[in-house]
Length: 114
Image (cartoon, rainbow, N blue to C red; front, side):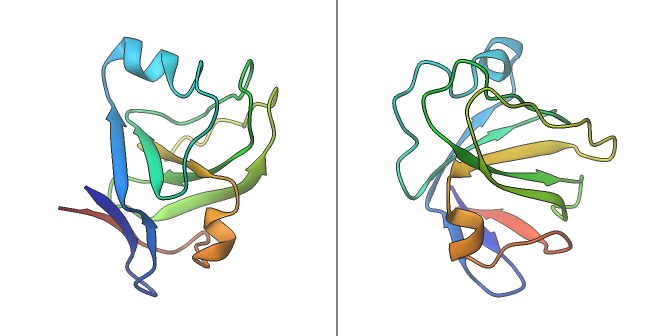
């Protein structure tokens, strides 16, 4: 499954892993040395994240139920936490620099495609 910005057609990730079970959501990216370019982790349900104990920076896009980006965070460094975004249904964690490279920002609509 891939993730596409519907405003500009940019592909944010060619491979999206989903974390919807409690343990998958709690584990997230912990224990990984990197998130390769072209990969993403979609966590649902989710309205805030942290990067405690992570070894690398990430970008994060908080999405509402319709796939609208309600908050786009670039270069979130290890040992940080985001605020709670009450209207977020999920968050997509991406390699740092992805949001800038794809010109993805709050207000854009993104979609998961097969």
